[in-house]
Image (cartoon, rainbow, N blue to C red):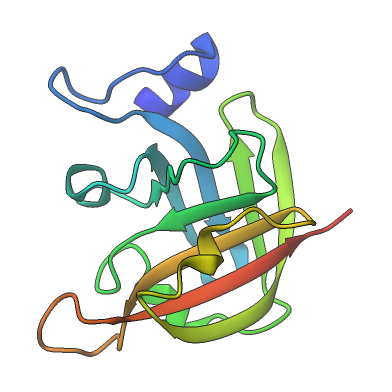
Length: 150
């Protein structure tokens, strides 16, 4: 509901009065029949309700859009993604960008270069790893990189 209101007004619309986040995009993985409203910020509050857009201090027009979510909820499907799978990211303006998965990797949480701007339009999805860990957190991250189709 608030994603549609944000899209209609082209302004951030908080999903609840005390929220520190708002919808910024819609992520779709058609092969896996998954669709999520992406919220601003990868805070605990935002990620309790969906993927969060990582605000890492890069320029807002950065070619690397980074989204993070929990491995046991919204991003549990990442373990099933394969190179070549399609992803779509729709902005609040309604503009859709198609991506294809180009890389899957496990990295240490200190390998923050996955957050840096890229030379080509890239969608980066990050979650904790391993997917079946009994305890949350841990030092490993599963990273999916997808290249924008031109």
